[in-house]
Image 1 (spheres, rainbow, N blue to C red):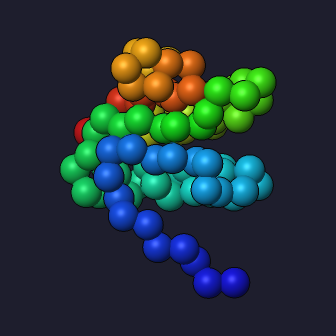
Image 2 (cartoon, rainbow, N blue to C red):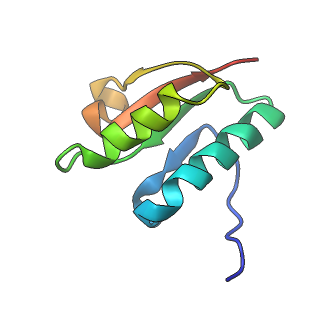
Length: 88
């Protein structure tokens, strides 16, 4: 299977990806954001039952490139999104 090319920007919407692909996707996307000079990003994981959110936040917690993260404001997606600050 060929890799999917996506534009690197400050928002990553996980709705179009399979859950099994999220760990590698997140790792690669964070690396590419830093390389592109993007140090603040929003990850849209959806609301649902919170399973994807917990998984994403666990991955962020264990990523050495992540400075901090928090739930997004209501205007930015509320508990369906996470705001991330990356280390420069």
